Length: 331
Figure 1 (cartoon, one colour):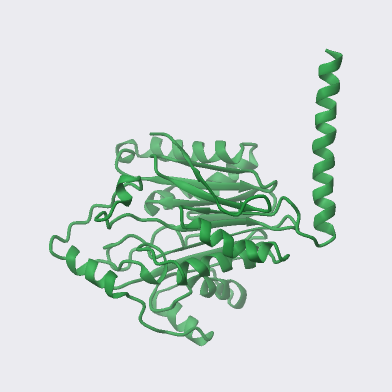
Figure 2: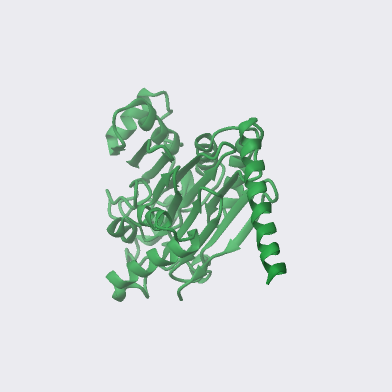
């Protein structure tokens, strides 16, 4: 018993020493080992690396997530994120984005057209207006006034896919599984959700997406809705979501995950409980939709959970820059 007690005391002291060392490192302005960035889906690896270039140089978590999201919007060519995104049922491509600092500041744009970096427009909304969310023509007008270039973004490939879809015009979103990622399953709806913890212990998050392919014109999902697709609180942690956005909005899902962490759940436990609540409210829909959560607490502990198999997330820190992990799932 005495040996066991000494072992536990030694372990506790070691953990405390490590935490103090990390805090001291942060206080000196050097990059602490706890600095970390996490993102949804496989393209999160590239987004993380772009964000990590900022974090490892001592930049803020807010700057890091904006940089990672900008990488996805411009460099990545994905059918559900950024300039290569598929259009709505009328052939119009619209983009959504949100950004949030752990101090409560946030900004978002929804249904914005022909602006390459909606995430940066969202940050401008946060920092240069008294508002949180701008939409449609108003969001575009604000972006142009702030110096963002207006230019057509719809790619020939996306237009061709829309024209092919018009032959049947059937709207059947599919679950984000490995099967749904196969060529030909064009209704797949991924989102880049990104969370970062910087060397000073500050948190920030960002979301960017082109939304569901072939959606009704004017449809907005959870990504630009603070509390649904993204929520960040310095005192607790951060969460982001992917999947069918309507379910995230109905449940204020990312806010829920953060509040569950505030009550003492680990990030993994909070993500799982949030999914359970979604299922309890709409059990009839649980077989046909995907719900995914990614969370990180203020200590840098990461957790993820999905309703169905197929959700992956990327983790990047000083130890490893390209980790891609399979999320646990209910089904």
